[in-house]
Image 1: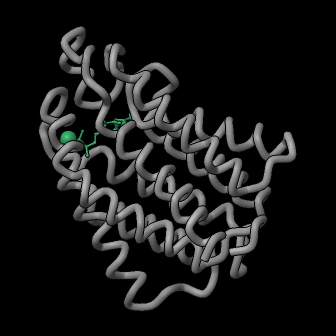
Image 2: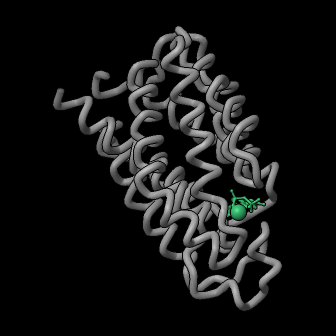
Length: 217
Ligand code: ADP
Ligand code: MG
């Protein structure tokens, strides 16, 4: 990639790293889900991200729009659980709001991510503080936009977004879940990090790491 755009290859590299990081942290994700859910988040995400990589390796779409839509459809059909349709929606909406070209400029990327997160919110009706993946995704998206508006380059802005996502993940620990399976536990959901917020922070961190690596290659 160049500093100010993400190519199809850069998105592919992001998703490869996401899949690898999900696989290496799957046990932890499942452990988090065993505390406040049904202990399947790690296996759900490994199944989905592995299928995404198999599909992309079999033939990488030529445009960012097609690549992101393909990722979304694969996640919807393979992850299962609440998170499958939510992550699927994220990528489908990102794709629907991306150009049919080989790269995303910084502003286009920001717009696509915003559309993706808005799609997750429209589908799951979670807001900040409900103890879901939104607690990581929403601040990451806000910070990305602010950082780009301040004139920071795409790589630096994505790094700041990753820091916001991990802070958002940690913020879920004391919260009582108001959405998803964990909400059935009521007050007993407090004291544990939300598994979907953890995987969402992995998603953003994987982007930061792959962009960092791509720029020094
Ligand atoms: P399931 O809860 O069906 O077993 P997973 O374990 O794969 O699915 O995913 C659980 C995660 O999904 C939660 O930790 C939470 O972050 C996310 N989630 C659940 N419901 C919602 C929702 N309505 N909005 C946003 N995220 C949600
Ligand atoms: Mg679960």
